[in-house]
Amino acid sequence: MTGIEDPRRIRVVLADDHPMFLSGVASLIRDTADIEVLASVGTGGRALQVIAELRPDIAVLDIAMPDMNGITVAARLSAEPHPVPAIMLSVYEDRLYVQQALSAGARGYILKRATSDNLLLAIRSVHAGGIYLDPMVASQQLATERTSPSVRDGMRRILPASLSDREEEILRFIALGYTNKEIASKLAITSKSIETYKARAAEKLGLRSRAKIVQYAVLRGWLHALA
Image (cartoon, rainbow, N blue to C red; front, side, top):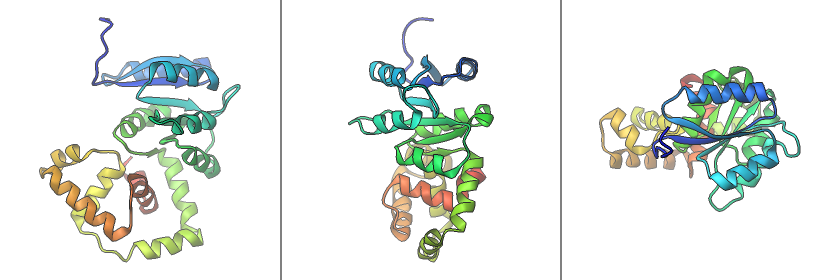
């Protein structure tokens, strides 16, 4: 260890009140080359303190913690002028927990039983500016929304707009958290072209933000299919 931080690495604070689980997650991250754990804590209150001190790139939070739950911590973080994005770790698959977490400002939701498969992808996606839902959660959200009259009405308004294959391809990448530069590299076109295709697709669908693009991707089943 040189004591010098690598600016290319994603800096993470972990918060969970189960020491064995916390240790396992920290060990998983330590095995990667692009992510590092700055601190591991066991309560929501301590998480807020450490995040304020260290200003990590990502906060990974258990929902059920002593003194302050993870959703409350995420809400506190999202209310700051320069919020640290939060990813929730949870045993709860119920869509109400997912909705509460996202409404509080969380950028990711991972089920604990699938942590090793999805956490690293979630950290990278959120750090790139995207939103990541555990594939099981995303599929349940989609199944529920397919039965919702308000969502069906919204989809009837959205789906008639015809996207070109390139526009749809680029929206998929954006929903997964890729930057314009990364998409341009993958598709061998310019960043300016990416922005043009994105603007055309967003105008057709009435999607005014990245968050709306992600919501649209969930409705179409794209995140589940590509995760």
